[in-house]
Image (cartoon, rainbow, N blue to C red):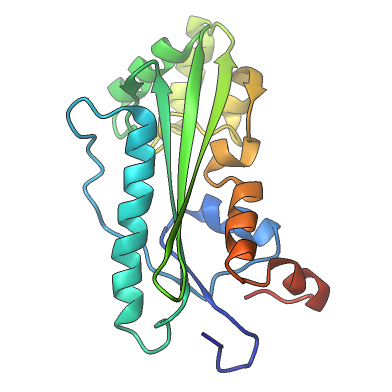
Amino acid sequence: MTQANGQGPILVLASASPRRLALLQQIGITPAHVLPADLDETPLPQELPRDHAQRLAHEKAQASSALARNDPQTAGAFVLAADTVVAVGRRILPKCETLDQARQCLVLLSGRAHRVYTGVTLVTPKGTLRHRLVESRLSFKRLSDGEMAAYLASGEWQGKAGGYAIQGLAGAFVVHLVGSYPSVVGLPLYETANLLAGEGFPVSALWAAGVSS
């Protein structure tokens, strides 16, 4: 689909996350529209963390794509969705809404390794679905009671998967990371750029033109 201003294909972001928007803007892409999907994100019984991330990214993309198709401004757009899951073993950590949840997550993460999975799904203007899953491995330092109390008091854990955001205060807890830093933040940039470019979205052309989508 071509925009009315003639700048070429447009992108819809199926997420209200300011972190994902900022990451896309980091690589020169500003979505023309944001159409977050309102889904039940409860894991299915026995669902593995990687499967959970893939499924939610897929469902978010499909739900947002359905909304986009019903609006003349977004019909035929690229639709990008992502979901990030923090896991200790097979256990999926929640997006913390209570102090108790956040404390339990910190206790689990303290002094041990965990994994972060980000699923990415792109719906092309032709309706084709493309997927990527990125796995990152992290280790946290052993947290003292004082560090836990201070972090919990900061309130930064609210709404965060696993109770932390690596780009925030909890970045001071990360001893080791193997994988993709932007994926842990919420969107793997290498994989996302390749998905878009592979389907004809002009990622690098936007850099040369000095404009965003």
